[in-house]
Image (tube, rainbow, N blue to C red; front, side, top):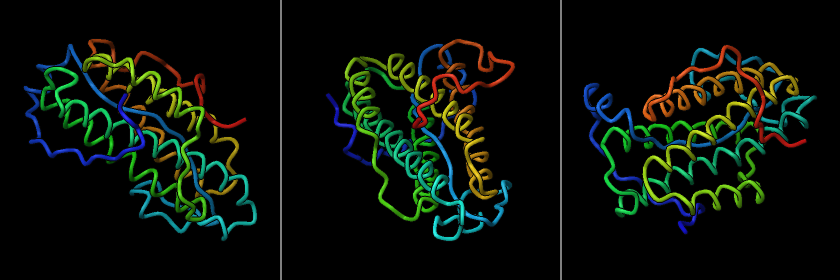
Length: 222
């Protein structure tokens, strides 16, 4: 089984044309999981990337303990997402998943970069601690990854992880106290849903099936 803790560097692929992307719509994808948050009394703008927000370090907020703990957990989930994407790209590059259209590799590489940026922002928000991947969740993902034999199978795993990530963000939002933490989570949540929509589309399913998002499937700690 591919070790999800290893972080092989994905080989860059040329950006596919719009026609090429739609041509592979019935087959594939790759994506992953996640979660949420940050911490600080200073409000952060949601119009830019997490790097543009006001410092959300846990040390700067009187209500930081809860927000920082959620941020640390979320950073671990995002790190697991990055590792899973890298493992999938590594397996694809090694020819273990069959033919991989360039559009699929492009999506996986882009989504992986999104998760890495989120992991970095969340780790900083938690106080700068090294993200720790929750062992039980990692074990479950490893078990499912071991069953993946082709790109459609990887796409299904990716879709499940993205939906769980989005549900986790939605679940933790009411538990956050600082405006900065709420803004950070709110800026990441829609990106997880965008990943899920792309994966649904390329698998031949309607990309936005729900009227309202729900926290069902959340991985947030109790």
